[in-house]
Image (cartoon, rainbow, N blue to C red):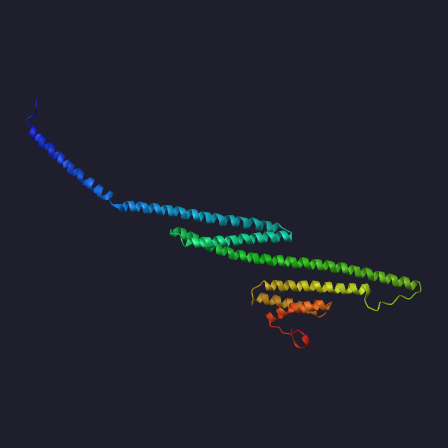
Length: 294
């Protein structure tokens, strides 16, 4: 059985369908307008590129920092070995290895400084600059440590040399004393036998005088080594500094003290040649007849 209002129902259905289509067309049109705009896609591409660049910069910085950390670990390990090492040759080799590590750090810092100019992320640039600043401070402190260590090694070498010369001098003194005792015994034996002791050789020296000359030369060498240690320590200081001038004056006074009674002409010439640059730097010029001014 058919409804009586079928024409009205058909009309209402068409009206509802038309209204539904119109209502659906509005969001579909808006969606099409939004998603058809290329700015969103461009923004996604840009963000992806920035993310990739950030990952690349982070990987680069991590590699640089790891390399620097490895060099620092090697330097710390070598420093610990240097503090325990007693042989000068091995200490010198370890110090050279540390200098090579410091040079490698300088090269890596130069590379990091060049990379910093190409970093696009502000946080990465700030991090790299802070690391460069800290390492500049570290290198300055490290240079001071190396200078002090070289000074200590040089002083240790000078002290070792002085000890060796003193040992040689002590041995020469013992030989002189033994020869003197033998001479006294020989003179006593000749006196008891009624014979006159033979006069000393015309050369005025013999073995006894030669040993005395050797002992005097060894004393001069010990004093020369001490004065030369002062001169070397002065040369390690900054020019025109008060400490450098004081050490040079002490070294000059020590050399002049040896020059008052040199063992031979060779020692005298060595002292005069060494005093030349010291006098020039201190403004001390030779006085009349070759005597040095105070």
